[in-house]
Image 1 (cartoon, one colour):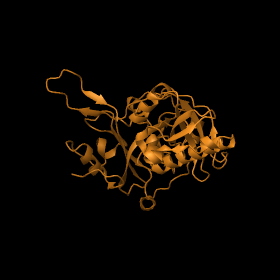
Image 2: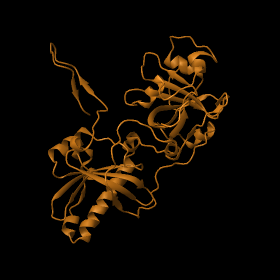
Image 3: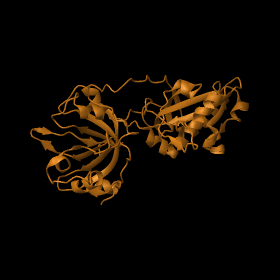
Image 4: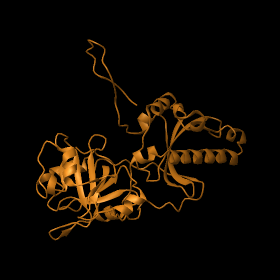
Length: 346
């Protein structure tokens, strides 16, 4: 029995033995021996993708690639349309509930490398048979050594340009409009836009978060100082550094009139529409201090210039954003209790 490990090598039989050991494996035929999209038995909504770059089927050559941000451009089987049940499942895929496991190789004579789970980004609403998708490789990046070892050629990033933002500045913008549903994009937009938009990567990047907080502190101090409020500038505090994450916000600053501002900073190198994580502590603090709570969403963050664009949301987070639980904490019911399972947010 084989175990599943990120970036390890596998053949189709070994992948089959991990996900469907109770069924027979037939090389080069059947579901596990031949198909590129495989549903995982007993896990409705879970899939395995077998991808070989440069592969063709009949006269169709698959156009597949990976950008420097871990965005995979991928196509379904040539016979599948947008109305196909499997395609609809893939369009509505929620990586918090289900898993799409990517096994990729660059040549037919190589083993597959396990790239981990995928998250949905976009699909092309104008083309079908095959249907074109963009997926985020959630465990990206892979090491330079592995990239060379498996012969992977990574394409350039197509994130939005950041060069128009001056050094050490924040450019205030309006909040982005919230999109409704997954309607896909026109072909021209789909081809030109390959943007990673996953909050997991930003949330795990403590260095990026700290850089965004430091930028906000510097800008708040300078704004107060330049308007003659040196007394208030001296009182600005990087709370996340002094108290840690338990405070429920990152920066304490002030308006020109001396009113306190509790500022939570969320930073991404991606676009302003990218989702982000908030903690139960942050939600509760915003509820207790709706008049002073400010969320600064920094986006298009430029590491070299230490600059970003940003928008501001004021008040209770639960009223300003659509909040979705990503984890549950379960506790044992008291003996004889008829109460429902106790669920709290982490």
